[in-house]
Length: 345
Image (tube, rainbow, N blue to C red; front, side, top):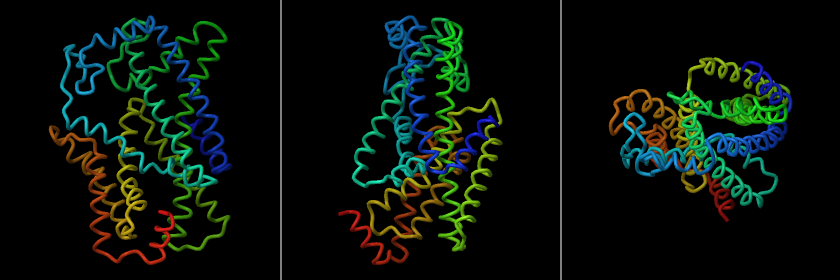
């Protein structure tokens, strides 16, 4: 983990946005190859596509949109409307992901935004469907005895590693392919980590220090501040990820809610509501970020109807804060309004 962190920090600090964009392209190719290999090899280890389908359909509620399979009793448990809405709230997180928005803001030609949006949407749809399919295939393979039957969510996250381990036991060529599969896991980690580090670095050196705090800095000083930010955040990330028993899903879930609630509503209101001002933007970010922690650690543990994914209530609170504070304070300047209208046209 430390070696991986050093590599990521190294090329992010030395190469900046160009290095991150170039490596992300390569990493996406490796990830695609890994997903394809795992899908077909997993089907083979499960006994064929028919066995995968039969295993999935034989479990009550396993493929249902309104029910969930209860493995303890072997029956279907109801999926309440509240749970469905809470699960769908994951989609709200995309509006506030800085590393995704940064790619669109860096586009060389505005006319390419439509094509970029379509490519991004299609890729996300395909990758999400393939991820779900790998889970279904993995369960079928575990029933067939090819890989262990997982009992915890943290163990089930190693399904691709289990398949890669089996693949590497056959021949030298397949061992190389297994290495590519494992590299695909690292590619997923690196492509997100370097983008987040780059976004944080530019946010601190430019937006926080120079734009907000009005600190005059030379180009060299700004670059140094960005590099120190990358190193500091990387050290904190290593500390948080040091626990080997921690679940990637729950860590990502909490981070996804934080970004989505703090920045998602602001991004939407900035694009579609001209009355949004500085005070409203700050209130929305603070309210959304705070509500994520409040709901996660104080409200959600009460269970029952309160057991909602924290992104949904935090997103709503952030939106309300933007509207209320923006209306209660001075409207944006004429210059900002003219810019808003020009972009709308």
